[in-house]
Length: 368
Image (cartoon, rainbow, N blue to C red; front, side, top):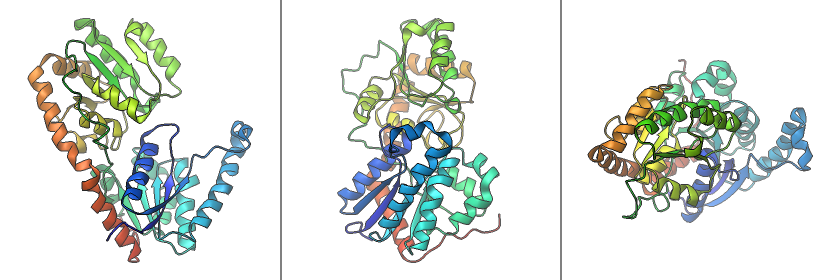
């Protein structure tokens, strides 16, 4: 089917702040509109009014949920399909589930685009309510074979529609890159599941052999002070830049300056940071958790190490920095691999999912 003229309610977070799902929501909306679709964006992270409501933890969710539900209901009268960006935890219960049920009440097909890297743990706790809600949706789309397997183990079929990387923005550096100044980059939120401490410890080991190496950590989160204290304890604080969260164009420049991009995560699905690094020509060293092995092949498009193993991570980084031929092979293979995540490749998959939803299909939850 053609996307031109299709009326889509796109439900999800939008920047600011910049972040994986928010960036994917914004990018998908822009691309669908470029194809001629009429996109109504319903944000799940809109600011509360009045602002002081955010300080009332037991009340702020209700203040956000009521106007959100009203926006969903109104959109149901003017769209052909709901596209719902979904995550694990409270985000599912407060935002994704209401969108599915309101779409069903209004007789509008809904596509649940589930993206939570912690899906396995979340479904162990909440599979009953999640699967009941999914049964009311028209289609379930996930960005990786990893999440497809997670849902398949619970008897829920899904379609893989990968994340989209903008190769016009995230592109390799020109001849001005200086290979003589090693620059490592970590582009994850400063939260426990992304295990920035392991990256800092690995960096400290790399610095022992290559003392000029520097590290930029691009992200915000509750662990910032603890991470800065750890950097001081490891005697690397003067070489680490906690630059905060950057916009898309700033991130593209940062990737192009990187000798190696490190992904130290303990839980992951299909990290945009890895795809963007690949598209930018920066070799990637990542942990082998979750869906990462579905997009990075060890020794071919990147180097994979066990989660929490800072010594192995340091060894992998030193290999990339010290073996020019290896770095070039990884770079070229990753640039070829990342082409499958471009809009021309992904567009038809979304078109097929929307067509299935509009045909009256439903998510069938089978006995696991």
